[in-house]
Structure formats: C-alpha cells, structure tokens
Length: 414
Image (cartoon, rainbow, N blue to C red):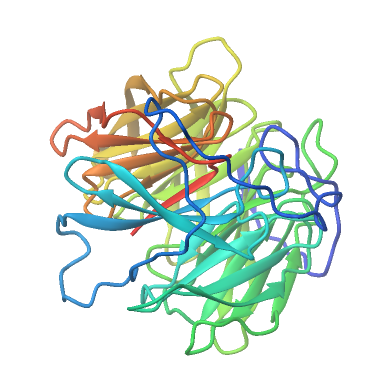
C-alpha cells in the first residue's frame, strides 16, 4: 500500500452501479414511484403508512443530542424505482429506551433516496437521488407542520450514493458512484441548495482489477474540518482534498492506495482524529489507517479480518462510538455486525465477535444521538433492525423484531 499526490478534475460519466450494492439506474428513472404494501400481520412490525406526519428533527428544548430522550425521529432511505421499493423517504419515530419504531408516514417526491444526511442545524435533510442523471434534494424540517421539499440540484454524474454536509454548514458534498466523481453544492440560509460549484472525476490512479472505471462511494470531512476525503471503490483509492470554503472548490492534496482489488467503500475516523477505519467491500477486510491532520495524508495499515469466515461477504459501513472504545461493521452476505475493541488510542482494532442482524444484506449502520441504540438498514429483507448498545462492553442486544420498511438502505435517527 502506498500514498502519493495527484489530481483529477472534470465531468465524467460511467457505468451503472453493480446490482448487489445498489438500485437500478437509468431505465426506471422516469417510472412511477412504487406503492408501499400494507402489513396485515402483527408478526413483523407495521409498514410505513402514506400519511406525512412529522415532528421537527431539531430540538428546541436546549437538550444535548447526547442525552437520552424518550422519542426520536427516524428517516428511512429506499429505492423507489425497484419492485417492492418505497414511495419516497420513510418517516418514523423511535423510543430511545425500548428501541421500538413506529411509522408516521412517507415523504413522496424524492426519487431513489438511497442515502440521507442532516444539516448541522437539524433544520434540513438532504437525500441523494440515485439515478443515471444523479441529483441531491433538500428537505426542510420545520418545527411544526410537514416537511417540505426545497428542490433538487444535478450532481453532474451518475448514481450518487453518498452525501455529507461540511461542518460549517455552507457546503454539501456528494459522491457519484457510476461516474466516479465528487460534487460540491452551496447551502443557502434556508437550507436550499445552489448550483454546483465543483465536480472532480477520479481519473488516476487507474481502476483496480475487474473494475471498469472509478466508483466514488463516500465523501466526508476530517474531524478537524481541514480536509475532505473521498473513498473510491473502483480505483482502490482514498483521495484527500482541501475545500475552498469561499469558492466551493476542491483541490487534491494527497491520495492513499489500497491493495489491488480491495474495493474500499466506507471510512470512519476515531475521535482523536489520528486514525481512521476503512471497510473494504471486495476483499472482505478492514484496515486501520494513520492520519496526519496537518497534511491530510492517510497511511493504510495491513488488512484485518471481518470475522465472517469463508463465505461470501461484502462489508458495508463501519461506525465508531463517541468515546472511541468500540467499532461496528455491517456485513452483507454474512448478515451480521462485527464488534471490535479499539486499542492503542485508536491505532488497533481487536475483533471481539459477530452478531446476526436478523435480516438480509445490512447496507448501513447508524447510532441514535445518545448511542444507546444502533440501527441497521437491511436491504434485501426490507427491514430495519434496532440494537441496544452496552456502553461498557459494546455488546449488542436486539430490541425486538426488525421494523418492516420497503428496501431499506439507509436509516437516519435524529
């Protein structure tokens, strides 16, 4: 593994996303949104209902988001263009003590919202529109009344699958999987998005073995806010950029190469900001990376086991507890969550165990703000599993039967 310098800028187009990691692109883009079937059996929890009731995602009580509370809001991403998919962004509430999820409706008018993120203010929700002509949509979350779609902007690429808000709240970053590019959009005071200010295509190094081009899978900001990192599965590379916060443009300052065929998918930082953990989708490994905040240089270590054995498995998302003691990895195929102890002030991962998600193909993980609960979005079983998290041991305990949600690929608890 090595790291080096380089850059690549410009628009690009690429192949559609592989079927096992995403939805259908292109052909279904103009199709009508699929209906949500009602659940008539009490065995799985109730399905999403087509009303639009929603309470605010931002708290006006002054309570710290880390403190336990009785109720939270849950937003669910799905594929609307697939058979059996959703009709838009699923809306629900959850009980932070019991883990029980209750459907409250669906926000329609957002096509294929496969990944969601919230503005630091809590007043605006953002969704990718994972289609051949990709988009990002802003949704206002008022303190009273219904959510409101503020508009959609073109990402300049195909199949956007990830987005994040820069910590300053003024820029939205998105990753176009199909075309291997990353985009920047300005965020207005209202939370609405402006026209794209930059688009960077990952043209070097060349694609890894078996890949037909770059496939940007994630874009996020380092803990100190100095750098933006983009994970590209097709190029086996993590790119580091500096964001010009006045112009909204990206300048590449470094890149880190993984071993050929690793297929890096998702990167998560340790709270110290000195280390990051990378989930590799294609070779079924995780890697601890040293990180230099001053230069933005990422140095990958040796691949480690996911604890899933010899069967086919595609690691998806990895998350880290707030105090930096435990990491959890979603395993698609093995259908489990791997629990790691974090040692050496973030420098080492020690595999502890794996726990079944009681679902199929856990695509994404997310903590509740209190971190008392961990949610998994299970794509192929159309469900969301909720786990109680033991703060001392990191042990996971399933909080009842999984919640039924059509082609659940993202769960965002607020």
